[in-house]
Image (cartoon, rainbow, N blue to C red):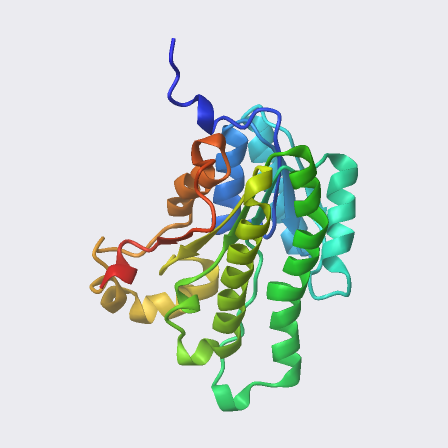
Length: 257
C-alpha cells in the first residue's frame, strides 16, 4: 500500500545538528530523531550546555531513538575540523544542520575587533570547516542534506546586528554556491530563514517589542522554535530531494509585506 510518509523517514541516516541543546536546534533534532535519524547533538561545552544537551539525548532515547552529545566551542581554532572528526568517528554524517550562531548587538560605531572576530569564528569560520569536511563525503556516497539556519536579518538587517546580519548573508551565499556544486551528486543545500522566533536570545527584546512586531506579521503572532521543525524535516529527507539552493523563510509571512 502506498505510504505518503515514507519519503520523510530517515531510518539509517545520521544527522549532526549544531547548537542543538535548546530551542530551534533542539526542535529540529527531535523532529529528525522522530523520523528515524541517529542524532549527533552539538553544544559549546559549558556546564550548562552539557546539561542541556544531555537532556536532549535523553528525550531522543525516550522516543526509542539514538543520540550522542558532542561538545565543541566554535570560537576555538579548527573547531569545525575537530567536531567533524569526532562525529564521523561515531558515524558518517548524512545530514548537517548548521544552527549554532552568536549575535552581539551593538551600535555600528562601537563594534570591536574582539566582537567581530568572535561572530566570524562561530558563524562563518567553523561553518566553512564543517562544510569542507562533511559535504564531500556525502557526495561520494551519493546522498546528503545540508540545511543552514539563516535569519530574516540576511535581507532586512537591523542596525544593531551589523556583523551578525552580514554573516547570515554570507552563509546564504555559501549555501547557494554549494547547491550548484553538489546538486548533481545527490546532495541538497538549502537555507531556512526564521523570522521573529521567541528564544532565550531575544526574549527581553520581544517582551518590549513583541506585541508591536506581531501586528506586522500576517500570521498574527511571533514564531516558536518548533515552527522550524516541519520545514527542516522536509529539506532533510527524500521528500525534499528536488529542493536545492532555496532560501525558505519561516516567518509567518513577514517577508511578504
